[in-house]
Image 1 (tube, chains in turn orange, cyan):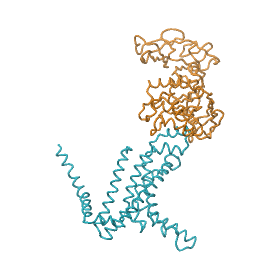
Image 2 (cartoon, chains in turn purple, brown):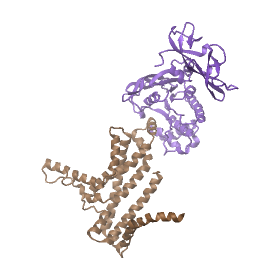
Image 3 (cartoon, rainbow over the protein chains, first blue to last red):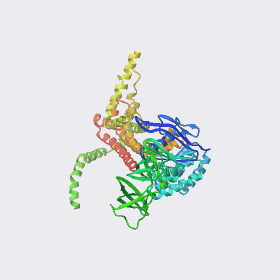
Image 4 (cartoon, each protein chain N blue to C red):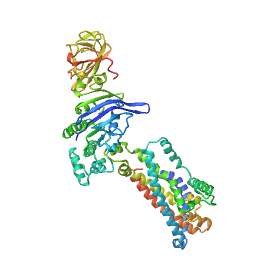
Length: 350
Length: 266
């Protein structure tokens, strides 16, 4: 059986403070949906509303066809993994994983098999007799995932599951989570994170949240290549956002007419032009912009240049340069027409 | 250098010896009067007092643990307006003298207390039905009332350290509140319960004020026995023997308490 998640106009308030503002979002059965946003954007509140830890002031939460808005957490049948693992310290790994099975009154004879299966799936079978304090952070998180999967939930909630791990472990666990989802294609996953790499890597779709509201929602490629709001463009991939005036055939930035797709934008209006830093090239070319280098960062395989063009800072990520360009030096940047996206003004405030 | 260290240590040790160890030694010496131990151990009143002391202390401790655990759970995990104030009040409560509680209970349930007063007003009977205050039950009630906060204090500290995420994950896994209390909260609170419980046990064994103030004539505990032997009967030898037994009992329990608290990391 599969079931998705639906937020139907969900609003959550604490006193006079609205922490989630009228969220409409559907997670399809078997889909991985990332809720991506900065802290305080409402993404964790949305997850907690699904888990049943916050009661919406208005709106409904559905799991499959079932309205769970008024159900207590223990009746929702949801697997949950949190940032700080939250393993039960006095129980061995095995008993931690068995906890949910016992709580759900799974027949005693079935429990050892189900525990072994969940531990096998997360590669923790050899640690069944250990206590949580005897495990590393990554291992503890695997146990927490096994514990959530043991109850065979239709919906899995992951709340910043990798944030407590160091960078190297994180990318390993990311691959691990992707594999788990391939093995359990029926489980719908709601993945809360502030890390765009996690969201881009793992999610089928990403819901971008900011200021208690849903800003944008789409596939990772869609959001990355065709962001619809300035917030998405800068939060996902940290794009250059240039204020432009739309003309007949292109847009004007700091007196330079750029050849960019203007779609239906009306001539004479102001808009924002979005260009990814890694799509900005150094040297002359189409859509050339000249400016002065204000900062250079060496990042191993690339150089990040900050170039001031008429009072605006343009970021360019170029392949590692043999010679670091001098600060204050004049350079020309360029980008291709198809790499630019015009964001109509007014969509930023969501 | 070591000589100077010893010189520094000398004055406090001397003061300690003079004001504390010397009187204690006198008590021990007095108790060693010929035949004193045999006489006391053979007396029915001593054995009765010993039994009364221990069962009252154990019963009061159990009562405090149960009541303290439930109250601390409510204060820590059930958000209600004024919860913080209640928690603060418990700190203040710890500083109250024990007889104050007994006095308050006397006003409520004593022979001329409010409860009996209302009864006599309503029914016209000359005396009310509430007479338990002068029985062991009255002492037990007073001790539980007074000592419960001593259990709650370490419990509340332990609960504040507990990750709420654990409780949330447990409930998402299908555990109802009672199961969470039993299988998640209680095991993690055990060290705090043990520490609070042993503290209350020791304090109950030595409690004097509460027993005296309830005016329970039939309730003779070891401290009461010491008091009556020494002050009322001037039988110092027997009083000292009882006192030594009382000290041995509470020091033994104190050692146990330290062991438990150390394991709990307190």
